[in-house]
Structure formats: structure tokens, C-alpha cells
Length: 225
Image (cartoon, helix red, strand yellow):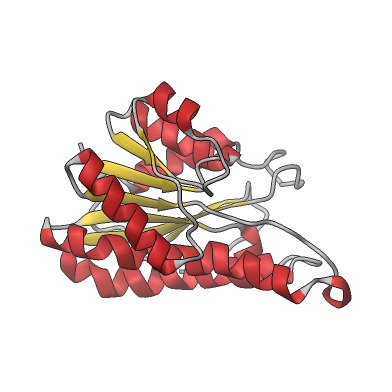
């Protein structure tokens, strides 16, 4: 089974994803900021703690190098779930914080995908799953940074899906509604459902799903590919 790297593993979605992939037989490396203690989660799932700031491309490459040396194998599955989620009305949203939201979700996904590409390509392929949100599909009031960042993540999945398919790398995204949002179904996706969707997209038996975004909004939002 491929070595999986889950960024944002200190968050609810990231933790659930790491547990799900480990339960499926993968060795899982869990990443978050250096001040987030991931040792307990890593020990629980028999994985590896790989701290690092995904907004710093040089730090991402260094973190990946340390991880692959420790693991003795390359990362075959990347799940980019790192996020900095703040919301504010447009006149009140601090510009530095706005960019931090974008740099974490969109910039972090790009930097991590760029870092794992050589190893995946050398070994014949891999899986990259990006975590977006309903805000990226439909927009959300008072959440311009989150909406713009996750729209970019969805577009990144489409673009990288086309570009990296030639290397045997399938790139897709998952977009859940925000917890607590009313939906026609009556509830938003749980962290467990998000994790199951990621595990589905990471499955090597699904090679032809490329550049897609799984809509986990309970019927709130309908999109076209």
C-alpha cells in the first residue's frame, strides 16, 4: 500500500482522513504546523508525524525529504487538507489574513503537489486529493478569501488532472458544505463522509476519474464538470 501524506491533519477533516486511510492499510504521514502536536495521532494510526508549514514551498520540500528518508519510500498519495478558515465582511477583512487563507488552501495545495510530483512520476503514478468546500463552487457571503481560495483549489484539480494524467497521477477534489449549513438532505457531510470520499478517490482501482470535484453538499449546490 502506498505511503499517504495528509496535510492539515490536526483539523477535524484531516484527522478523520488520516484514520480512514490507515484503516485501509496505508502507512500515513500526518502534517500540520510545527506547533500542532501530531504525535498522539501518529502513534494511534501507526504513522509518522511530519510537521511543516505548507505556505512555505521550501519548507514543504524539506519536510517531504525528511519524511521520505524516514519512511524509506516515496509518497504515493497526497491529501491536501490544510486550511486557515476565517470569515469577515469585505470592509473588515484584514488583507494579511485574507492572503493567509488563500496561501494555506490554494498555495499549500500547489506547493505540496509540486513537491510530490517527481517521486510519483518516477514510480509510475499516484493519487492527489485536494480538499475544497461548497464556498468554492457557489460563493459564500462574508467569506471572500475562503470562496476564492477553494474556487482556485477546484480549478487546480481540473488543471493538474489534465497535466499529470500522463504520469499516471489522478488529481481530484472533495467539496463539502460547511458544518451546520441547512441542506435538502437535512445535514451536511460529516468528517467521516469526507474521509470516505477521499479514500474513494485515492483508490488505485479508480484510474479514470481525473479532475473531478465530489460535491458533498446534501443537494444544496449543483455544479457542472
